[in-house]
Image (cartoon, rainbow over all chains, first blue to last red; front, side, top):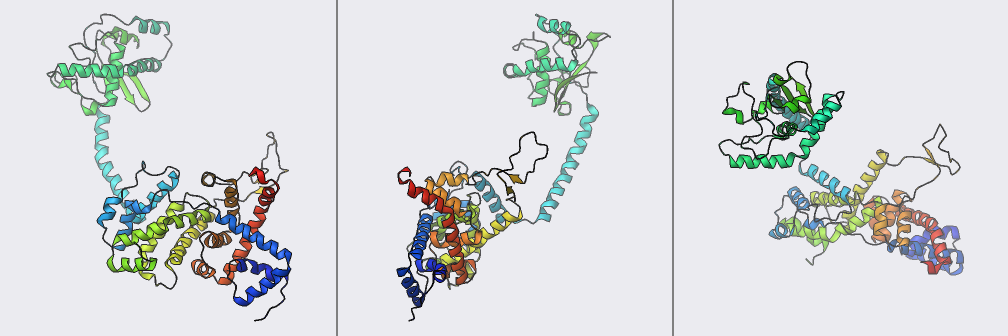
Length: 312
Length: 209
């Protein structure tokens, strides 16, 4: 046992280990003897103590959700280990849905699940690309002929307004259109489209009722696009009562559909509608023509940009 | 299950019953999460760290020889996961090097603005720390901890928060005991420098706390 007289420079690097009791016996005695006579080093030791105390005062954080009840994690872990899952785990563990986890760490939740899935299915990159290429090729084989058929048949007559004359013409529309002759067609159609979309729910329910009341002449179930086209036709002729015995939309005669088939829309013609009626004066007033307006056919088509009308 | 960690490991190896592993997860998941949070400074990646750690544990359980304690072995794996994340963070350039110049106040009319020079520095305290460390002192300490170098912070977390010995830390981190001692010394020294203004202020105004 040798008690060396250490300087402050010697003791300073040893103070942390002295505080942590990580010095051997000799070093410990040397530092202790120096501390007895050095106020400066005692102050430094107190500083170390305060730092350690402040670190120990930090709260112990808890996992947002326990892994012991995370069945995704447990299944992955036990698949790796190749061990059997106890019935206790099966009954107590549950999938960590978004509803039963703490929402404090949404990013961690998402990224953690992503990595977990990657660990569950360690599919190499080339396999993923090969699968995606095969899927794309299959989609092309299926969709391209379908798209070609659709393009060949469009624009196609879809529906006509009933031939029943309007009992109460919509004078407002006529006045507006007469007063603003320079407004483009598209703007006018948009105006009517807004009206029709606002009335969409009401008319749709009315048509459903009509179909229910007339099982022999049902209104076909259509896609959203064709329903919108239907509603435009309805909106332009506001005199059509929703509860009329005659369906609001019929296929135009002479377009390759027999009367019996005319009650249903072809999928290929979905998305475009032609209104042919000699009684749709207010509708035709929207689209003034220099030729005989009565016999004009107007196609109302839809696309991703909205609704527009085409003169055939 | 009132078994030691090593007994749980041996039982799991022998029987492959999931409850032994689940018990180990239950014992250590919060400690690993807490240490990862103190090392990484945010909660975003901590759950990943815990999951990755235990998946690696169960994957390499046969390699556990029992020379070190199970806790040290577990934290060694957790430490490697954290270090990988820290390296990826630096590699991705999460932190951009900028210059701090208080005199670089430029008015809005200035044509040329040097985006690498800032005149004000936002408080980098992470929001989760604000939420979790409700007390001001805890926020100050947690913020200061993130300002010291990674290697020193890891040693401080492992010793002063998790309570590992120098020898265990040396095995966890993969350095000598002397290096652990040195890192701990310098880490605490920097923490002291960072916390001194707070401690002095607290000493001057004891009733304000």
